[in-house]
Length: 337
Image (tube, rainbow, N blue to C red):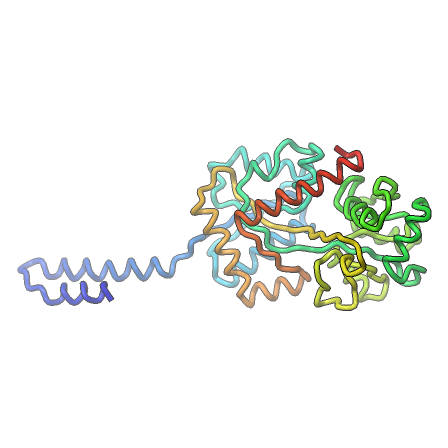
């Protein structure tokens, strides 16, 4: 309304030789205001991916970039895969090139906490600028279709009687995420977490093959991966680590409702370079939040079976600190720290 009044005043002035300049100035003010309203807070995002093509980090970054771009929330998106050091190579690069990386968002997940605690690399999330956790994948305990175990309770009973008879497969190394989740669950059932017979495989697919071949009795894995196999009729999911039942699998009980005080989510989210201004970090977080209300995001989310767990800035930091403490205490108990 104020701009309209100023523009009207400009039209009414009769100064010789100056009216044209006044009109031009008022029109320029209108145009500048309109452009400011239509401009994006974030124009460009370069996604730094600490792993190779086709992995969980890669899919998260590219899916997020696809949704942001197609929804018109950003103009330019690019990707860079930088494997090495369990994710440490990309972290070190982002820190070293911080001044030139203001438009960079690095994707990461729970392993940044675990591997930092294990000193796989010397940095932690505190050396970066946490932007937001965006999606999550719960853990699940899976048996092959013809397994004698019809419930997680039966599995725990056998473990407590003779832990040697229950071998647990996982797609990460000893002391990795799949191992720790299993240790948490059996500990909650009154067992000794140190006695978990964990069999590590190179990847989730190989761990699943080990389960199907009968090499192990149960698989500790991501819920979304287990869900696809369950839909194909190859496995049964005994329990999930969510707080409440997951809508896409309402027949699968949570550990909590079975009496085990365990909840766990493998979050995935984004970090900016160290020294990133609060304004830029807020702009990134706000842009990601806007993404959730778009049809383009719904398409990507449902295609990948992701769960939304948006935690921006300070909430994200608090969540990371809490996870670090819980995971760290368990790793100490298991002798990995």
